[in-house]
Length: 149
Image (cartoon, rainbow, N blue to C red; front, side, top):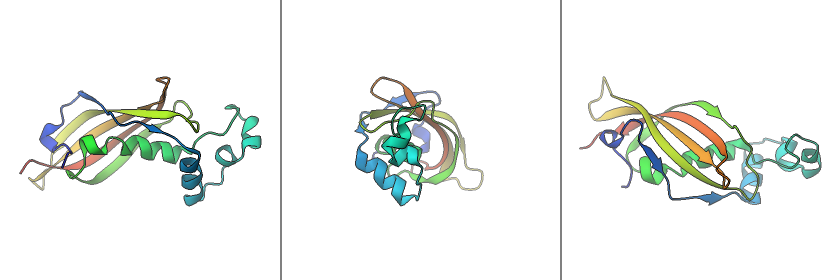
């Protein structure tokens, strides 16, 4: 597996993930309809023309999923036991269909489990940027990670 074990996370080190992803119309439409979010800012171009954005914006749940998904191969693939918390989620700039997102990850803190010696808890921050280097998403999460065997 390519994920990091608890011991591999170094506080304040930044991982710049190589995988990037261009957001498509289908991405926005599927997430919006699958989550029953009928907000016209995501679905109705005419409505969105009069919004502060001037056009439709991508559903933020998709943005959140992408910004936490891109890092998986480099950080938690096969080494996580689950997410314990998502917190401090911010969307400082909108994402539009056609934007290409990249992600950076930083370990914020970590501690060994008090009750299970085979695992540890890591605080992680993911930052998503568009092709113009505008910050579009920041999310902090807490992951339960395997320790090295």
